[in-house]
Length: 403
Ligand code: ADP
Image (cartoon, rainbow, N blue to C red; front, side, top):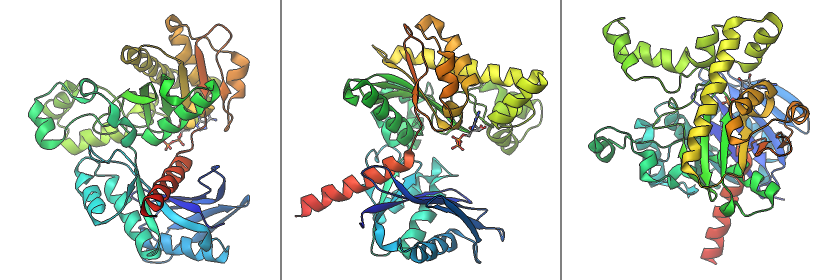
């Protein structure tokens, strides 16, 4: 079989990859190249349940990582299975709301959109260029993280600031994690045995980055992340919403530079900032349960309260609600966080089933609400499968149109 899709997700110093059957999501091989651009660059590969790792050769960049991956794909006789490459691209702006075949214009657009996603789009483009060089005969497709949210109405994406900032500089809310929210919403629709277009959900992707989305008739109508992934609920190291006046206070009264504020809000806030312990939810939960650590308890409380408030506020975007979906590393694994969030939402008739909530961890998906409660599910996300599926579908459509 040669219609597996190689899915690439390129970060500034990392490259995640999976070789996926687009029709059933089966993963033939997956892995991660990390610490790129340093002489400790390493590639970790999982294949047939076996894990291996190898050093990446100089110049230790994304191109070296892709070449190293190609070598291993050849050694494992998997290179001929690949029919196309699907890339996760973080920012697609307003023009890219569909899977897109990559050509020079698309690459130029991704580069231009780097002004809105300076940490992500340049890395995504580097991955595309490296993959093009390594696989010159394969088609490359971009799947944009912002695409799912392009159905948001204007009233949801316009900020309350002068309108020309939107018109001239594209300053508006875009939202992210779109591929993940789309996947779990589709899975929840399958559970309900209804077409997604007839379903309304609130989806909470809770990982290091967190976002909440209101999905009406299968479409995103509002989301908590904004122009950048800093807006919305509190996250691992990101603050989420704060009074913008705090920024001026920090600069004018406490002598912070703009860079200091940027670092503080993006890297030193959130669970890490409030707990003073870690950005990792597991570490904070352990400190809370085993050591009765007060700051850990507060960090969990603030985190859950803010998420519950965001969920409640998104009911304003909907006319019906089939249920809440929890996903992402925290959403899929932390019974404590889910319990706290649902307890805060009793007015909306959410009640957790303790046994089911405890059982739904480590990749298990299912209902965690009790009888008589509005539904709440845990659904393990699989962004890679969506990228593989959409890449495959786009290329199939274009082949059909050509013939
Ligand atoms: P990213 O946004 O980087 O993709 P993930 O979705 O992998 O992040 O989520 C990472 C978060 O998930 C971390 O805070 C981690 O502590 C949390 N997590 C993973 N497993 C568990 C668990 N068993 N219990 C609680 N939190 C967990």
